[in-house]
Image 1 (cartoon, rainbow, N blue to C red):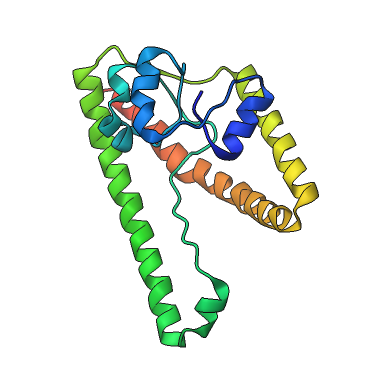
Image 2: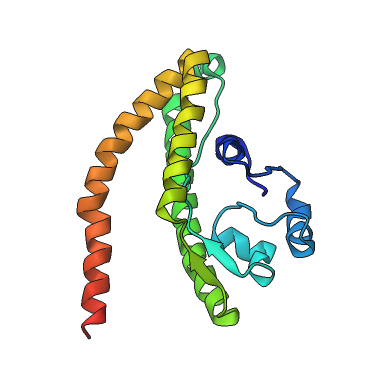
Length: 189
């Protein structure tokens, strides 16, 4: 399976033969069976690569619920900027991130609709609960390993985890409830 980064380490812990081949070789590798599966971005980007033409199954993400943008800025260079340019750079990064998020969401909505219309046999799958539990356990082990050896990783991971606990509680009350209710209302029409 082609899956990079921490998610790749998690999959490898569970026995998956992980590889990270160049983007230009992914379609051919999937089509020829060189790899059995791949992780890419989402329908908005996947459709451009044509993966839906050679893959029958589309699994929901367990490791990446949404796209997040990262901007890396050299702190010493940033600190040398006049305050007004620091504010301008931060504002530009926020605007670019929001634009890319909104554009990607819209593109994925359109692409998924097109994929399902043109390739109606694509099946959406979710990993079974025992697999998800094993993935969570393996992920926790990977995070613990990095936290033990890298104080900065530990600091960021703990901060991220505390935020996600709050964010999930709110998401369950807002987006999840809205989606469930909308689905139920649609089925009663």
